[in-house]
Image 1 (cartoon, rainbow, N blue to C red):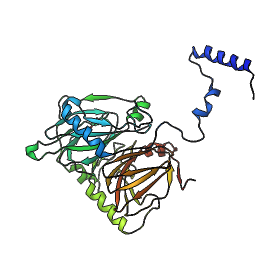
Image 2: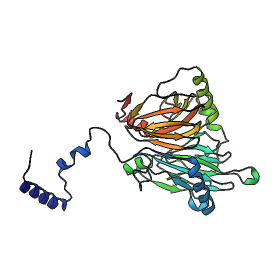
Image 3: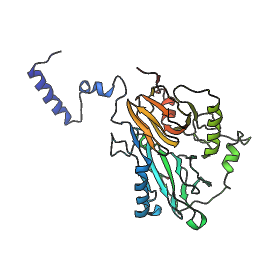
Image 4: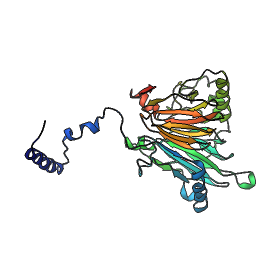
Length: 352
Ligand code: 1HN
């Protein structure tokens, strides 16, 4: 309908008057509130580890883990700064812990994953059990569990350790369900020997009387060695997915579902020279490169990647993955478990 100038003015004046009452005419917003397909300010981006690492080490000289509580550089989506978010629902940061340091114990309703990027020997304690970290290990801190991190002194062989933190911070914030508290001491007591949870839950066996009490996997470290071995065996068989090569998801052995209720994590292998087909999905995804050089074509833009680089694929943005002259291993996480649970997940292979 064509409107004359008079009607236009009347409407504007009407909108101004109701604006004072916190009222908004839906018809002016409908197309942005209910778009035909996902539209957001979040954009594809890649952080080069070689560029980022000096900042992390500088942070190591300027502030202690104890003072910082967590010495982390947050990876903010460049299209949406100021939100501490890499996707609308997820947070990403790189955490450094130096030899001899302790990151004090606390707990919060946000769930965290740790994906170890560099260095050996630092440990994290979760809910009374400690585990040591090595590159490629995937570690879970479930919602509302006490957790602290530490690193042996240099004399004891400690070295700087860096990991990627993936948290559901924007999701929990969205639901208004953020709670946190500090443990009265810097370290929580260790109640079980190292490896206890992996013996109970991570050996394709479960304690016979196990009753699931948590939505999160009771395994809290998935060591890289075992993940890598599975990928290697499958990759050699040439039974490849045209889009993803060999892609496995981290599983909660008590349910068969995702290892975490709000974050889905996967590891994949792209054989040497692999040229992945294009797909897109509604779960915006964060990737951490474990091994190999290759490229990701995201929304038509090419991002060359090297080991330890991090990149993000926004929702409903086309992506294809390509390995260079060596095989590539990629860790990734997204909010897929939430979208699946709510019946929102959509995927399209070979979009036009
Ligand atoms: C947190 O507790 C950790 O425990 C890391 O290592 C990053 C970011 C925001 C809020 C809590 C950790 C975090 C965090």
